Every structure is written in structure tokens, then in C-alpha cells.
Image (cartoon, rainbow, N blue to C red; front, top):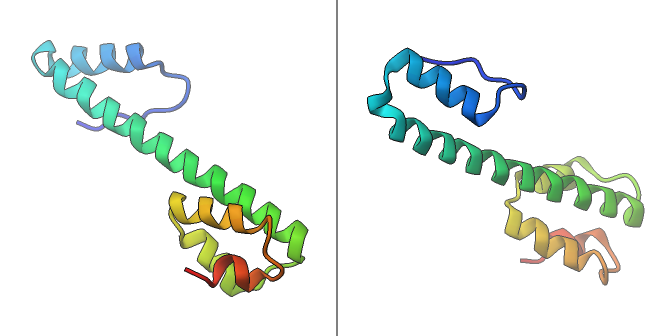
Length: 101
């Protein structure tokens, strides 16, 4: 069974809905799944925030970014984005920020 979820449902409301629909015997599995989904959402949100901040920093520092730079930033993971965010403080060129490994 798949539930349509939006921000208006609290975790407790979703849990109640799920256990009412499928039974209390799988409540632990539902809670575990909810925890996994919450963590996945947190990680996605962190990456989105890091990416948005880096793009803003790069644009302010170097002007309009080429498509290749945008693609690299959009494809990067959180650790890479954090490294680049540190580099933007001292780099003289865009290449020094995102081209070096």
C-alpha cells in the first residue's frame, strides 16, 4: 500500500494512518521506514542548501557561471560542495575552485 504524504501530516498522524490501514503488527517496520525517509530528506536538504549557497558565492565572486560549472556543482555531493565553498574564499579564478581535486 502506498500513502500520499504531504507536509501537513505529522509523523504521529502518518503512523496512525498506516497502522490503522495495515495493522499494528508492522508498526516497527513503518517507524523504521519513516526514519530512513526522514534521514534521506535531511541529506537531500543539506545538499540542496550547500549547492545553493555555493552557486550564490561563485556567482557573486566570478559573475555568470558557464554551463559546465553549473553542471559540476549540481552533480557534486555534500563533501565536494563543502570543499569548494572553502576554496571560493581564496581562489583567484573559478577553475581554482571547481577544477582542482
